[in-house]
Length: 388
Image (cartoon, rainbow, N blue to C red; front, top):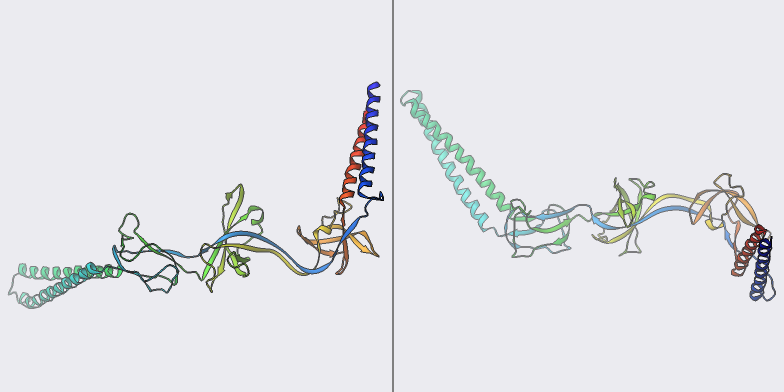
């Protein structure tokens, strides 16, 4: 019993001390000892556009980037291009020393001429001896040899023709031309350098330049798994490059990665956005941000999300909210129905009209401190009662 009385005395003392502290605090902040009146920040219901977007950052990349190598090996004697040059399909990229290839073509042409002459001779002998064989003036063994000689001559001609074609091909391979229209992104060699063939060399040969068609580029960006379900192929996207913050490029989602990747413990899916780049402003490697519109609805009544309060009945419809509607100078609770909503704003389906004014209580620091003190006093009272 004595223990209970001690707790009762302690509880009462706490209540008295807390109450005195509250009074002192209120009087120290308010000379008149009056609690601050609740102030409201007003918002007007206005018509506008509701838009939800998913944003991500990525890097500009060419769609088709080609690493150009030479099929032939040798010394580069002509390299008329520089990094950043625009070239057309068929333009000269590099020319290798052609002395050996030209000599090989000349030799192959001479071999072809000899083979053709030998075949002509074999054919004339064949034609003359054919008549003699028909008249049985020469033996069958001799006739067979004549036929064999003509066949061998034909084979040599085919071989010589093939050798000439191959020599001419090697000569053409010593000249490297652009396979597409594009921009030279990288240049790996200089005039006078000896390069290895990209066909016969085990290491894959020496790269000469990187070429890409930059008339259309893509942005590869990682989208959080929370938002990836809202994105589909074909959706439009706005692209803003850091180099041109004042410009907005239009793009389209062309591919969504089927598998996620983890970056700093965040699960991301790579999304490819294709962007037209006809003016060439977007360069390979530029940083860019993409904004993909998920929902957009125009000319609808909107209110700030901060003006919405939870409904009086928690079990009611999820689209019902309470606002403080200004009437005759006072702000009174008013029920509304909302549609599209975000953390910033919400669409009003019913309950308000354009031009209505809403209020949001602006609690002063003094009132907040007093409320906290009152809460502590209530807790102290509760402690004393339970002790009894």
